[in-house]
Length: 155
Image (cartoon, rainbow, N blue to C red):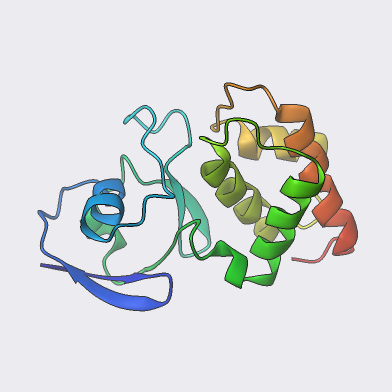
């Protein structure tokens, strides 16, 4: 049994400690907004927050999340910054197929928490592990810059 705090709620999951956090979230807790893409931490579609850090849940053992706050795409809009990023995503028409967008949003929120007024290089570096098959990278950058400008460079 592993105790987790997911989206502000304490839960227990009866899974092996080495199980990827992704599968505990999706299969055990029914949180399917976090997507399975590559299974190797390379595509970013499974990105969640562990504390304030963006992590790839497909390669993060559930035991590593024990006792730490896990935030998923299902809960990110309850945070002011998360809501702002999601609104900017819509405003910039970022999503096309939408498969990668949960991970993209989670990475963008983590970036803006740590670097409130990111440069293009900051954005490229933070978002480089998130693959978008639809190629909406310029709109992703525009949405991130929109949030930074709206917030006056404040996290």
